[in-house]
Image (cartoon, rainbow, N blue to C red):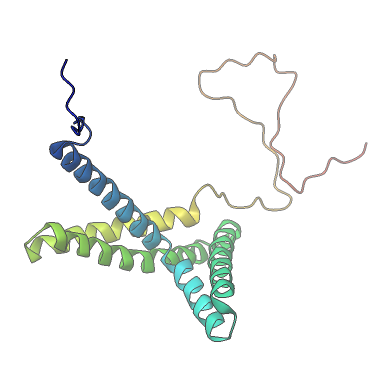
Length: 193
């Protein structure tokens, strides 16, 4: 074995090709995260707009940058939570439609703009950019609608009749029919006998 003074050990990780491959992969990951962040922001366009408006107003009123950021974040969170609650307690389909559209329409517009911008980066033809932008608007508007209405059932009405819980199809009951489980609404109280 011959040892040469001043020689550097070339490893696989420091090779030119390896560094190019790692660079390309990190660029793809970075663009994916950037695209996800833009589309996540687009689906929350209404709370973002309310938060930015309150933050800018607070900054102009003298709250300072930290106070304006906190005020904007609280306003955006409050808007989203109140809208989801209003959607869950609303019984009228028209009220639910209005609340859902308040979130879906600005989100669809933002999704259209983001998708059209991405289409201009990757598609040289103007004619193909518009259909992709429309599909992006539909997807982002649908996600915004789902975010408002996700996992929230209408609140049970007071005095609703209790119904027996049904087992899933094909599952035999082992209680022999002597014991029944009932669905209880949150405001229901057992009467004293």
